[in-house]
Each structure stands twice: as C-alpha cells, then as structure tokens.
View 1 (cartoon, protein in one colour):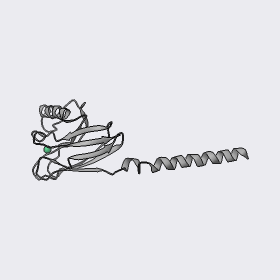
View 2 (view 1 turned 180 degrees about the horizontal axis):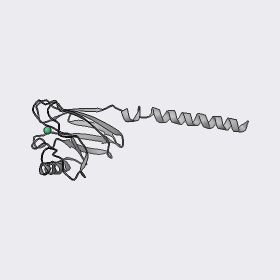
View 3 (view 1 turned 45 degrees about the horizontal axis):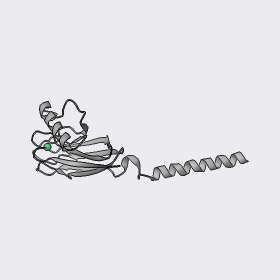
View 4 (view 1 turned 90 degrees about the vertical axis):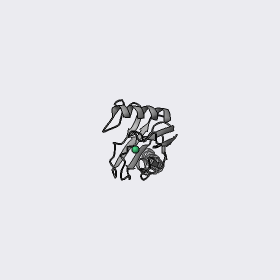
Length: 154
Ligand code: CU
C-alpha cells in the first residue's frame, strides 16, 4: 500500500515538472515566431535594422528581397561592425556569385545572394548574449549602410 502511494506521488511530481517545463518559453522552437527581414524597398538597407533573440534559442529569419533591381543577402557575423567589415572584405575577395568568404569562422548564419524578389529562410541557434551585426555582402551594399543589429538577451 505504501509503495502504491509513493508511486502515485512520483507520477504526479513528474507530470507537474513536465507541465512546468512546457509552460516556460511558450513552445520552444516557435517561441516568438520567425523574424521577418526584408530589403527596405530599393534602398540599400534592411527593414527592420534591429532584431532580438534569446541566447541559445532556435532562431528563424525569413529574409525577403523585395527589391526589383538589387541582389541582396543576409549575413550575421560573430561580432559588431569590426567583424562585419572583415567579412565584407572577405566577401569581395571571394567574389561572384556567392560573396561569402571561404573561411566562415566569423559568420553565425547567412542566406545565399538572392535575386530581386527572392526569399530564403535561415535557421540557426542564437549565440551568447551580446550584439551582433548583420550585413549584405553584395559589393558596396555594406558600405552604403545595408546592415542591422541582432541583440541577443541572456
Ligand atoms: Cu544588398
């Protein structure tokens, strides 16, 4: 009799813990939903130029090149503007058609170069808390201001 009561207690504890775990972040992978980023019309800029994520959480970026004339990509680097500048230089050295440095050590995640009207979904795990620059590595676009900041909260 004692064993049965213990077992019941254990079972209810486990289900309480399971419920607590599931109730936490509002559903894990889908928490907050995908982040929508697009080219800012025909401007060499992103809309929005600021995104947020939570450290260690899965992130989905739906990148939409709404431009009718420009090719663009979306490249998130492991640091701020200094790292972005280095990646941009590497991209120019790498050249067409990808404009992505052969050594991707400074890149968290990136899309391909998208033709006007192109779309790509990028998934990655948010890095440690901090601020990270995203940029377009198509030649001249970063220099023209096509960049933004992903702020990762602890
Ligand atoms: Cu661009």
